[in-house]
Image (tube, rainbow, N blue to C red; front, side):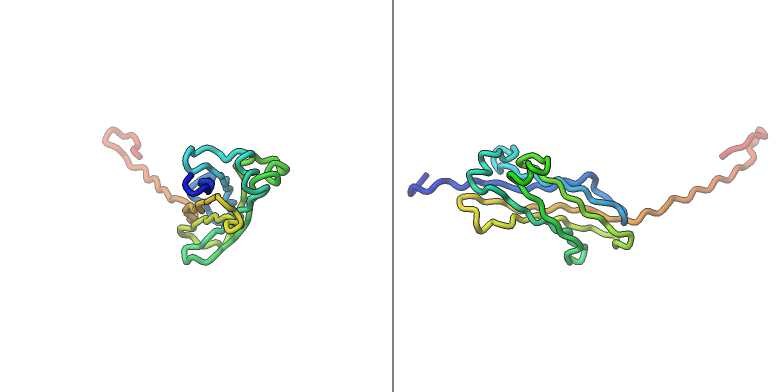
Length: 153
């Protein structure tokens, strides 16, 4: 590299959810991935250990008015392996109350230690999820007499 500086690693965070639409009272299940921005593969144990022994990511659920409705964090590295996860993946849950307002919410993920990670750039991530109240459909069946004496629906 020019001037003797190592080229920075470029990683990105990706948030996935188990479904795009939720109802109040349900739980949003998230999978947070740490990917190499160039290869799109999971960051390996060796790559992560070369930068930091543990990477923590803050994940916030923002309401439609952009206020933080809930927050959590997850870890990559040895802590993730100790809890049964993989090096480049982490899981997280957000429980919605029954009184949660409907609308489009955003999940936002940002690394905690970005300022401490030398030669590593990590792009934050966001994902939209919708929360809608369920309204049961109403059907009406009205039988009428047909010309041949049978019923029609």
